[in-house]
Image 1 (cartoon, rainbow, N blue to C red):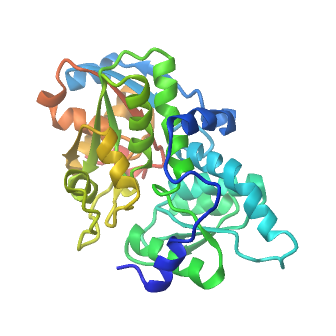
Image 2 (cartoon, one colour):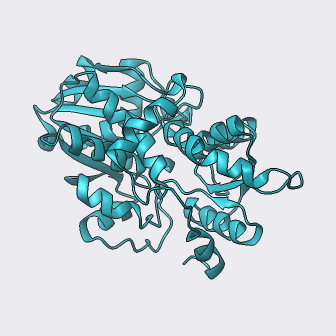
Length: 343
């Protein structure tokens, strides 16, 4: 459970910011996203299609400076909220807290990129078991990283408490409308490019990616299906989607897909997800590993398990997707190298 102090910090309002993401916000976000993070590769892959029994197009979001899509939303957040944060910090002593977040690593890197561009101090709380390469990357981008707790959500609660104690602005992936709008630009680019697809298959972490992509698809191509993917070992977002109840799971998720290892849903993300998503499926650890290796073998790409969850769903649920035309984002490339060699 979140502490009283943490809940108070989480509820701090930010005036003049829309309370929920919009299609207009997705369009506006595109101009704020640096060139190195947008217009990413999009192509159909015959080898993936043969392995999955359907036509597969991939949107490659793992070949950029932080090797994930997270900078899209973080940079849009920085463009919208950065000036206000800079003004608040102006004239205050050096070391005054700016932004704080909890992250398994990829969002922390994206926000660190945006914070550095704006000159805003950033503190990231990650779990004691966070991927060391992701922790190193966040620090290299200028973030102060504190390792706390047994899983991502415990680290996020520590970040919330820190915000309440210090006055830092807590930035939450899945809650801030700009984060979701930035992620939605992936679907905008897919549809503008004329992708052949009747179904988008999208990994589900805190909900920003599938919420943003689903929001744009409902606006621009409502005939497309939107299918989310969670790890079977971390099913809480599927349960929240189906029931509307964002109650946390009791135990920490035991999955290799740290980017979608959610124990505590973000309440603000669930209603949008229920509005724009058709279905959520689960995948096992074996399918996640198989998808990582398949992408490396066929496309020469290093994709982390969470980023490969869409491909894992195609492999594990062939009857569900057979002969369909699929588009899926490969949304993170910060993989443990051992996964590529393990059998």
